[in-house]
Image (cartoon, rainbow, N blue to C red; front, side, top):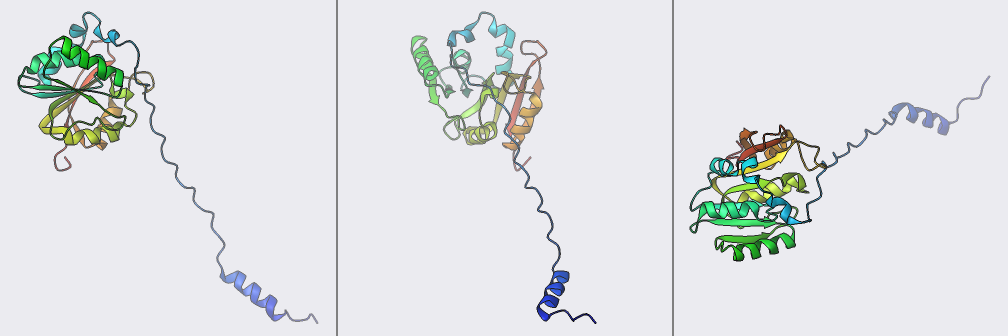
Length: 227
């Protein structure tokens, strides 16, 4: 006759039946990697002054669609050489103003000198940051990002920081080209998604700039009450 189980061993067996088997831990979801962006241009600013650029980009039509007219305040984000700053300055006149923003101190210095040389008394320069354009609250009626959105390192954060600077009914224009973010372009669908996350809605889409099948012009407005 076999000897009975010892009490201690019996209790171990019973507890083993009662305690459920450990389940494998679910893998922690990994945060999506931020999309690629292009390195901001820091080279010769004269490249933006190429002859015929006005006609290729149809910049007068762009300003019409953004409501840029006499007395309005305009922000030129990523102003570079000040190419658009000069044209907007002449359009808004002495009763308006242009805020020329860039994260490159050399560009800001160059625009300041250009404004003095060309007697553009309505131009103000603003040194922004990669995540904040640093514009004063309630300061602008229209904004243009001309071939610069793909260079913004933190696009959603940056555009959220832009919102307080917009006056009622302000329009934000973005001219860019299709690309993967790192090739000096970004697909317009990506911009629409990011701008939506930043609190903007797409108001209009155009493809007349340069007419090369790659460039596009998008106009956004700040969402009101989540719409």
